[in-house]
Amino acid sequence: MADLRRTGHRATDRGQMILLAGFAMAVTLLVLAVVINSAIATENLGTRSDIGSTSGAVTYQGAVERGALEAFRYANEVNGSDDHDELAANVTTAVEAVSALSARQQVTRGYVPNASVVDTVEGTAIRDDTGEFTGPNDDSNWTVANSVSGVREFSLYVDRWNSTSPHEFRVVASDPSTWYLNVSYDGSEYEVGVTDSGAYQSCYSGPSGNFWVNVSAGTVAGSPCPALDMGSLGSYDLAFENGSAVEEGRYSLVVNRSAASRYDTDPGEPRGETVLYSATVDLRYRGPDLSYRTSLRIAPGESDA
Image (cartoon, rainbow, N blue to C red; front, side):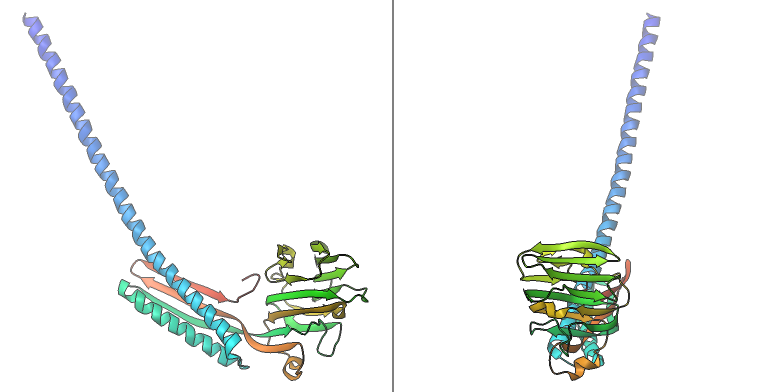
């Protein structure tokens, strides 16, 4: 009997040890769960804080960018000044106003935003709505702009072809060995293509002679043509060759070069107007948990902007 009781005590002791071990394990798991949940909660709070501050910076940047773009377009299209400094001053004042308004909204949250125009580039808007691609003196081959390194909002509309012309119309950057756009008509179909460093890519072929070539957007008759991209050409002279081949059409573009004398003095077509080609806005957004700075380039209709 004595042996049986001792055996019973040992069984009871083992049961208590198992119970204690299970309880200890449960406590350990509970503590571990609390630690993990605390870490997750802390991370979530930190992430929410980052998102809140970053969201404010993104909102501010969007407001400044929209305001600068509207001011830029208003200065070029509505003000109509021939003075580059006056156009630049109008954009600068408008951006400062947008920045000040946004700052009053953000300062209550502990953030200090600021935006300012740090640079503007003078340009010339060249347009011809008369239906001709010839130059100011009715030259079939002529230079549209010398030594440009940027073109934006460049588009051409071809309406009708000169049936007596055996030539193709070309838009040439520097010389045909560098880059040129060609438009041709064989009597039944029109062909539009681009030759870049000797490599030719067809962009359009069809019977219709009514189509847009949007060089800056990289489309012909609404279809994509990546070869139209002029963003990597560097500095070049932009010229039209065989402009008389097009019977009727129109074109417009903005180059990053001040107006040439022929556009200032010739009362006919094409017209050349002083505009801003681009503007650079310095943007800063600072707060207790974020320091953000970037540059905004305002150049609407630029293929590489």
